[in-house]
Length: 505
Image 1 (cartoon, one colour):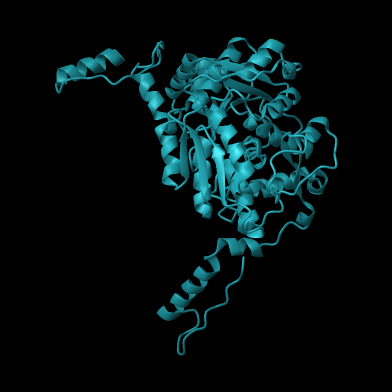
Image 2 (cartoon, one colour):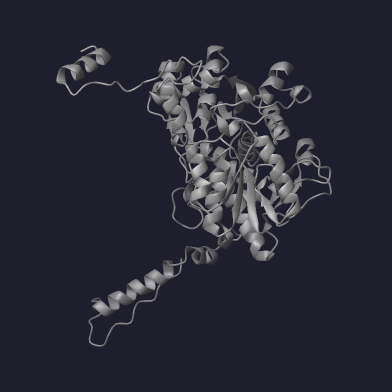
């Protein structure tokens, strides 16, 4: 922070007593000092060895095999695939990061929580050295995402599961209402940098989406003044999800296909135009999403939970959580990793089918086949051909993971049952909760296991599904936890009868 000079006193004014003019001058100087938080960030002294930190794109196969090939790319390059057509991964120089010990990193990250200092008040950019260390603070596009609540689901845990240590990571408590903000701040910030370095190289940013990605992309691009384009499957997302990119000024293309069809189209478009691809095959987004895992460890005072349950569709998020936990372990901030559970909707469950067929994760790769996804209330994970399948398999194998599924009735019942204990869950969180109910029933997860369910979006984005459930208008669904309003006349006796019927007065 810069030090302000004492304002000059007017002639005749006593020292220590400001005239109205001098008080105004003090306010003007103070305002000038704080007017540009980006400039303040540039004046901040960096970590002494921060210049040694670096990250680059490498083939994901290098990560899988722990081998280092000669192939790598700058993060400033517009590239999505390796030479062999495989995915890329953002690789950090772990030796450089390890110049600072675990105590230092824990203290640094903890000290930044809740601050207004740009950009460290963000839950993502508070870990900037582990995300995009070479990015200037001036290029960052942030809405102070992250720092989401880790909710102790005490009542639901005890009454529904017989558990004492159940937590829900509320990633949907974010700017656009989903965890996608964590990744989009990173991707759009890097695009912001590239557009400054190479004018004309990127004219817009585009994505295929089942709803939440498009909302995050359009909001962050709007904040940065970057045009955005979203490809949405027609009539397959909620009204709340559809209106977000419209409100933020994106070009919204409603296409008569499913997500996989939208994904094929956006890949073709970005291959032929200077439109930058924002889907999770672009590994930049995973760098932001991995910070939610680090944040969970922070919120537990750097203690590792036993289980983390994550809804899975395109499967980038389970790899992102794995990557966050793995970095913390490799740099000594923790001494182990949690077991991971990928929870899929039964109507879009290619990973579960492979897991079930292989009877575990060891041979899951050989058993995997893409499927044609069917309609599910968990629309954001209605994906039958996930881009990040290889990433997810690696994460599950290394973390001794499990894959579970939930039917439509199971996921909606689980969400509604948890809502009755104070939550307001999206259907995707319902998938994870239903998976937890099954794993508890089979005693795979114990009553005292510290377990975190990742809630990926806010329930308000899926109010239509809740209305359908509580009005019992979902075909072939009992809706056993439905709570429809009771219609009564404007009559005290009728009102009292309704109250007595409910509470046995």
